[in-house]
Image (cartoon, rainbow, N blue to C red):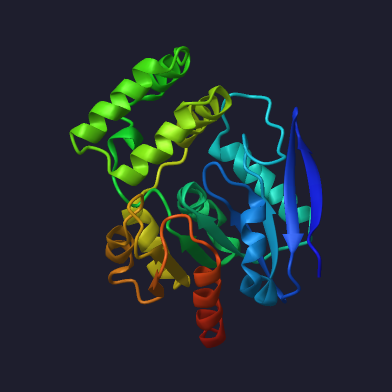
Length: 272
């Protein structure tokens, strides 16, 4: 079945999402930073088990977002609008990288309707200075975002952090690519401001997963330097319903190795 594409209005914004797959279950998929919902279309194994609804998050893909930030409450309302339009009551939630961070943050609110949580190299399980609400409170993030031009001072800070080994090479290259172009750096800072509203409370989330016995699947690339798998392994400890899987790949997954890994797990799991 070929993918179909849809739009949904939310105030002054227009959200774009794709739908593919012919499985009996529903899956809502959230992509990573600088990506779009089409990322998931190459994961053919998901389409065999699910009807997949892949959203273009604000500032990404074909979604038109008219504000400089988005909130957790706004995204929850958008998700519920999409599920209502598609007549979905029960669903699984998947997220890659930044989308994984958002999935982790929203999962407690969506828990009554969740069948499984599928995380692909999720952000949010490791503490980083840029995520700290103490080091970078919301007013400071907005202050810095208003002073992006020219970007030389930002590049200098990242270069210093790399020399001081505060950033690994993969993260440094990723951020430098985003800072060098005006539209990309504004998207980067808009997302950074927005993610302040998506905290991940690991202890609370583990308690909820344990009590509900929610199936939790974590996939990490063996060569991933941006979100190292050890943080996923630590989170999965003492959670009977959690499974951790390595994929022979990096952070962004070339999809073919990930798809093969997903296919093997799908063949074994009843509730995935």
